[in-house]
Length: 119
Length: 119
DNA sequence: CCGTATCCGATCCGATACTG
DNA sequence: CAGTATCGGATCGGATACGG
Image (cartoon, rainbow over all chains, first blue to last red; front, side, top):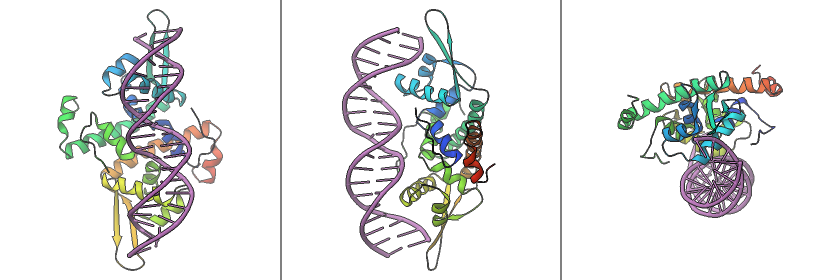
């Protein structure tokens, strides 16, 4: 992954950190602690393995996500958010989630929220 | 602009609201009140008029930005963030800005912050 | 179970030119 | 000053197949 050497403002970097369709959702899914790849794939509707690994990798390189590998067989890997940058980013993601929930309520999409237990 | 009719989670909508290289920066630039197009173009390094108008338009359609047109000549238009959704989104953007500032400090990019008066 | 590689259509975004 | 139209390269993201 490229980390550009010419940034003109802090938000430009953060955009690189979290751009991509799945990154905010991934951060949200890690809010309660470490999760395996297989679980993430199960919990996130519509994602595929390629996107999952690719975007987790980028989040890891920016210090938002931590990857932990455990010895033994079968292979076991867990992903979690980092206590510093990851936690802060989660705060931003939670605000955005609230915005999304409000938007859905106001626009007749509440059914989706219900079936997810968010309402 | 399309508002998909199939969303599977609130963060997916919010991603549509703020995706794009310039949207977080635009929201940040409107933090202190209404600004004209020409001023935004001056304040945001590297943006061009097309992107400026395009992304402001999308933010407006999602209720994050408000466009106000004043009568008279020359034409005067001002953009501001909305008190509800726009303000909340600004809260998220401010967290992200702080993350970006930290990141830059930790990675020897503090010079950019200095020249912007952010440090 | 975890990760990599490739292919390909969709979209993003920058440059540029033009209108009121 | 504010906004529209178009074009082409770069990037993104989904499907699929393969390897540790």
